[in-house]
Image 1 (spheres, rainbow, N blue to C red):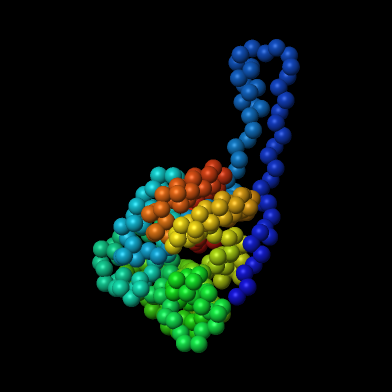
Image 2: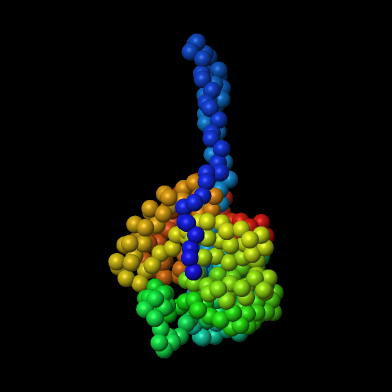
Length: 290
């Protein structure tokens, strides 16, 4: 599926007001202080948004997710989008863990957003796969592209089941994000049929209710090898600069990121820099849905 042009956005910020000139005639100290205040540039308006999302949240990753939430909150991000896997790698459905369910409700009550993130986050290999399929589902995603080529009927069944399970514990997610952002056309239609509010891809956020694509490529790190980690850091530093004037900046965090010092340091540094001119929101908050 073709991705949109990742950098076709416009600068939505108005130019700052011109600074007032300070008279050259001698002034008293109080007058100088007053003139200095008047001539100071106006604070930069935070008209742009930052969405921090934590991927692969499940009972398996709860402890490390809590660590991430704590450190991100210390930077000034009070709420994030939590991408929750219902049955992470077939290792146990989240509804069978009452403590995890209670924790999820607490997170939601604190302002975090719960998002459906696939179901198993695992795609089994299939016989006769093309080179392109192998590249997308084995090498790019390490076998986790669950919704890459799923049929519409299967997607309808699985997402319906996931949504009902969340509702059974008192939560009602509005969004769905496919593992690795790989979403088949059939699954895309299924999400619309189910009335899902939005989905995200690597390069955009799509609001199903309005039909609007918000172009913004997510910053995300690959940590499976030293080379991937190095390249991720160079790429995300470049991408952060390219997206400086984009209305939406997205930072996607995966649990393994915390285990690599250089990667985690860059994530925190870029988050802190983004907060200087952006308001932290969830995806639902950005779309004005909560």
